[in-house]
Image 1 (cartoon, one colour):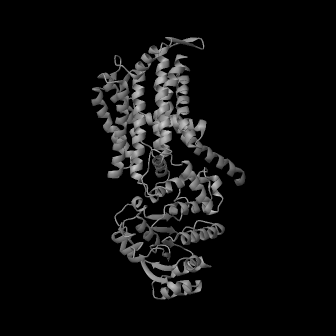
Image 2 (cartoon, chains in turn purple, yellow; image 1 turned 180 degrees about the horizontal axis):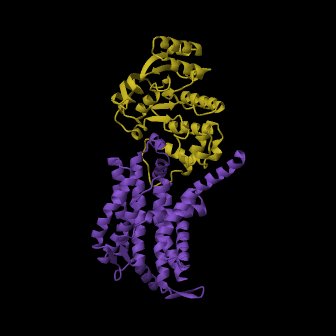
Image 3 (cartoon, helix red, strand yellow; image 1 turned 135 degrees about the horizontal axis):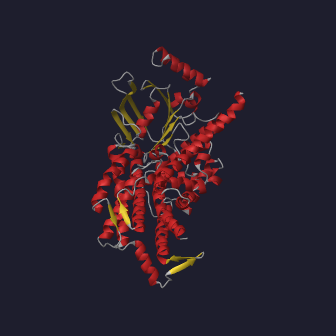
Length: 312
Length: 275
């Protein structure tokens, strides 16, 4: 039960990462490698600020703001210098490695004694005189797990609500239009460079926010934390699309949450079944490869099968 | 008297300059269009028609020359900024609309052409939806009941009609139509042309329309330009344009050919298209 609630919390907070990947990959039609860097950056900024006693809420928002800056930098390289967003993302992520090391004052930083958002939630839990343990399906679950889950749920639902509303405003619609068909977008008066930058800023803010929450949930930040996060985000995204489809914006946004939770549950199940922890990245990469590559393979196979009788 | 809707002065543009593939797409194009002018443009492939439209729309910045739209010097303006003055329908129905957005969403984007984008209000509020339904109904294609259908699910003709509505939703100083029926079947072509002509006449839009179809070039517009090798080689307007017949235009092409202004292949192609 504890593992389940842990996976659920992790699923909720990482869905912010998936939401970020959704904005760049699906809405803007671009793969943004800044994702890896800004996840680690969010974790590093939050850890450094929390370590020096800053209020967790301020530290978390500051981490998201650092993600906005990272996204804006990638956007600027693209708009001002004409560097492709893929390369711009790699450059920014590479540069961010040093910035993370400097921010944390080393390769990793423990949050052992710092007051984090889950701590604040737990304090509120106790202040509300709720019980110390909750009995669920025969196991007793400590309150801290519940309050941590609550933090993730609140942050994620709020972010999803704001984003879903934004994407329906004039500017949000312009963003989707510019990403969906840049040629038509320009003919309709949209500065596609500025729109791409806006998308990158939004996405990387969400990713950094995910990084900040992740670090607080785990109790430490590490410079290699962001490594491969773009692939994890993609895995959750395609899983969510598999579950809910891509027919409406609402389905797609809810799908990022559903996909991420399903992905974390899959990971938990795989680990419980004995999959060695160090194979997780490889398994994730293979999953994304299969999800993105299999449909094309199936189409090709089907065509070959259809052709076979005609040829014979 | 108000400023002309469009002034082109000595436009030049060369692709791949100083290479074996050098192509002089525009070689000194001058053109003045007054408000409410409806000008047709014909010419063979590679004559410079598309480059001309791109230079006006800002998709391409010409090597030399000036572009003024509605009295404003826009030669160096990027395409998105010129879109405040220019509405455009592309040759390919897929190009002008956003496939995964719905009809209503596409039109909501078009309704903001050249205006600021807010972040406080829903782009598809009740008032906007009603306005969209009304104007879509005027198209007469029955799309008003399908406002929440993704545009990608529409036929080429429907999509092109929608692009036309999007290009003219905010009244453009200049409307550019680039062979807008060349990807459509004959039935859709006829419907599209009727719709286009009706819209241009009823709203008094200043329009520059490129076409491959000689019958269209003869039947539509108040003035006809023949463009060849990056130059306007003939301009037919006034009573001569009104009385113009297809045969006459073809004879005119023959004369141009004998003067070596239109090459053999271009004249052949024009004939084939007509037949």
